[in-house]
Length: 211
Image (cartoon, rainbow, N blue to C red; front, top):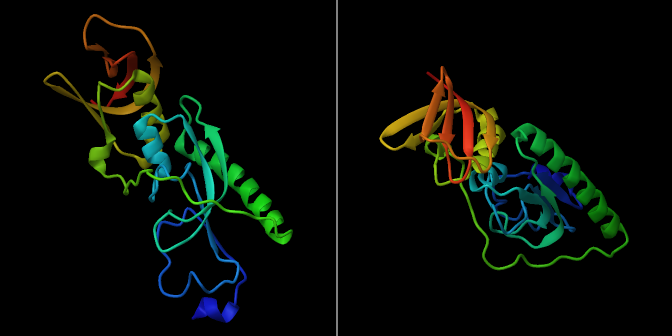
């Protein structure tokens, strides 16, 4: 009712993790838009950047899309891609994606004013991921060392410990230090105090352990 009193031409939200219910979608005559930090239809859901790091996807992007009754399923208005640098933090990646997203919004508004704005349905398929839980911070030595390093750096802001099983041993890690993409070491785990080097597939991850 409060929104209806404003009588908006357009509703624009960013990274909005909920569905619009009732007649809210039909209220603004120009529709409802959402800015989503992934290349839809991939990584639908509330934490797309986390899951991009988790899957080892360096190529991501931003999508401006119309909102419909689904979650992140509406037609695409604007989209642009972006490559995550090795070791980038989550907040730094979010800032870069936000800057790209603001450009998409300005482009779409300009097209809307000139009555040249077009949209296209999302391609078939895609993926949806929920909010991560503590189990999602587990590493797998079948990952590459680059993927493990980027995941730890990119999700460090969540403040969760990282767990990796190496043989019968379970290691608890705090911070990723570096990685060597192609090297191999004699043992699966090498230690120097709290500094541990772990063999991945391929490469070696060096990290600070919790103990």
